Image (cartoon, rainbow, N blue to C red):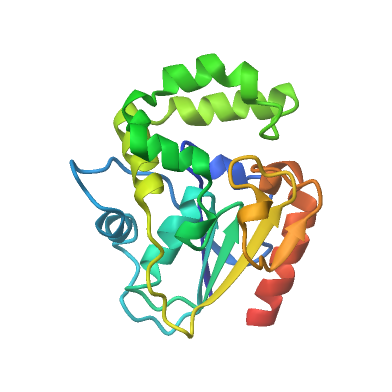
Amino acid sequence: MKIYLIPGLGYDCRIFEKLNFKNSDVNFINWIEPIQNENITDYSLRLFKELPQNSNEKIILIGHSFGGFVAQEIAQHKNIDKIILIASIKSQSEIPLSFKLVKALKLYKFFTKELCINSFKYWCKTHGFKNKEEKDLFKSMLNKQTNNYLQWALKTLTEWKEPKIPSNTKIIQFHGSNDKTFPIRLIKEPTMVIDKGTHIMLYTQAEKINGIFNKIIKQNN
């Protein structure tokens, strides 16, 4: 069994660093630069080009936020046993109005890491970043991204339509009750709601999340 961890928009694999998957075969995915006008399906296939079309191994994709979008795209084309969504969505109907406005007004064109970091102090606490460690980590992760990638990813997120996933691929959705990016009120029948969980709960509530993950993995074995 192989596990692939896909971070959210602007994040990198360090968002998963407090998780412990014991003896599992864990693979960290980090973002690559999108090609001009590339759609999310083609981008996702490039990101996972080393993953065989059909594999005898059980594959689990764990996607945080935008990483969950990519995980679902991959499941259209590869043999995936389970998709675990963390602070992510599984359908277009779960996209909040704020992102729909970004699409309508094409605000993604103005989305840069400089703007995000400069405004961070105004929205960091409401989105789950409380202490210096968490805030410094986010700034460090965001600084690694290019503005081209950030604008492409935000535009892609606002335009996303859920793909048709084979019925043998199980989707497990964990969502925080205090997620401000994708509000829990829009999430339809999540597998589990994490009390007081924010958009970065896999980092701030890692012990709880990790316990849930390892139960799922144990069942797979």
